[in-house]
Length: 246
Ligand code: BTN
Image (tube, rainbow, N blue to C red; front, side, top):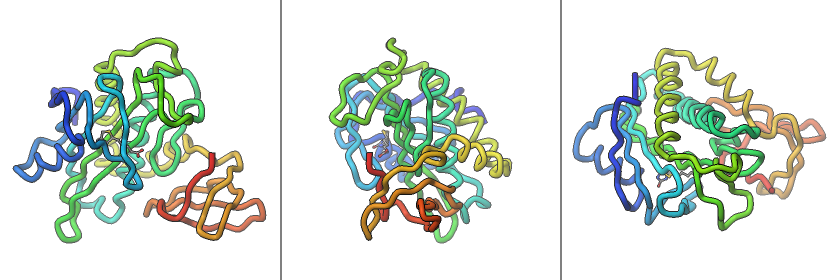
């Protein structure tokens, strides 16, 4: 598996690279690892139905088409952990500051969000037929609408060619995805937890019942996060049920 050998499909402007990948999948079966990159998205999609905003030509906006092995159908979140690790390693190659994975798969440099991942799956019955791994990495943008966002260049004080970030991402993705396909999930799971934000420090989380002070224990195979409060109570939550308060 070597996704680096596949030249990306480059679009100047598109609604969303994930949507473009979905259109390709509707028309046929593109080769695994097909990468669609855009300089600008008019309707970039984020998690929790959020919009993904990115200045033109400043950042890496890509989607990869993958066909996960049938044995992974029962654990789709394993792909999410795999992609998060690949993006984590990519950021580590360019930023010397602490890089962390914030559940489920946000990437933080020095505590600020530098990359996001949106995986959209296609199923045929109970079998996983395709996954679109949409990745946005903030590379050279310096000014953001929210103050807990950052970019590689903001943290390294120099501009970075976006192509270099993409090549590194393709290299890391090939490596970790191959390990996942070869059944090396235990190691991927362990590495994901090693870089997981919030395991050692207590943060405030907002849940339906109010606010709690807690630490992350682990991320379960179904994607839920397990927290432990200061009083020792453990509970697990889906993405729609919890939010970290900055
Ligand atoms: C998040 O909310 O953190 C996930 C953001 C994912 C953004 C990327 S940019 C490329 C791809 N195309 C999209 O529309 N979204 C993903």
